[in-house]
Length: 335
Image (cartoon, rainbow, N blue to C red; front, side, top):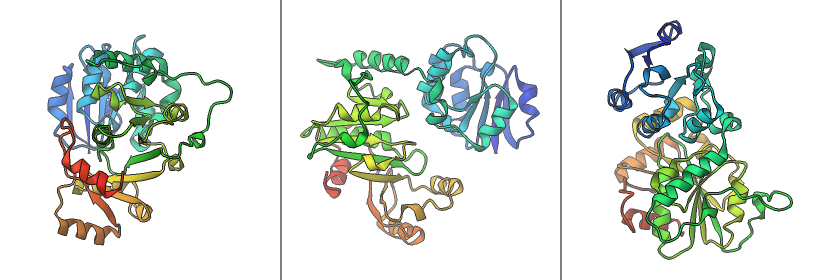
């Protein structure tokens, strides 16, 4: 079932003839929308942008993106010059907001075919995203911030292919969320902190900018197009951890771990999206992340899914240093 938040475009949204379990009308502060829906289960939220007070200030949309799962939100834009500008759309994309449209046809399409970064990359001004990352990096109290960490530099001659990364000691370790919110971003952050005590470690996310919120200049956000360049800059590292997101070419990685958050709701949602999800993972390295299952529960999970679980990581405090559960995982997989 869906929810709706509408104001100026109430008539358009009501005419969609969707199954709606809750709707609110008016102009709301972002905090009011978050409080209403953050703990409310729904399939999709159709959000009339004019229902957001001061929506032309993208700081308000940033707060929304940090507190709601924007993969489940379809943002109906208005026809104002501000929201029609490429700069505004680029900021939405930088915040991880990919599902936006201006008409009912677009809403109906996105309900069935939600966008990934690849679908909206042509609207994204990457230089604007880099500037935000640089500003965030400079806010952190650090003795030295290298601008090469956040800039997409131009390489001489032909662009390198990913397969040109040939340092014998370098391991490129990929992580891919299978269930929603399986925690690849935070796990990579904790792994980088733990292994970084003794090794030279880099972390890269592809087609997303969630690393921005850790305020760590050594966490790199990049795109499919520029991933090869970022990898080439780090051939002298021991490890590069990559949050693959929707990037499917796992051949760039030395090894890949597929993360599942094994709650009933997340597993069932994964099955609804792809009936063969477990079948496709039979030959892969499966890790249960944010896992509170007992050993017997994990054994039952393996029996029911026909998967072999490599390891189970319990919920961790990502503010900690040298986290024990992360050290156990590191030892388990021989990183």
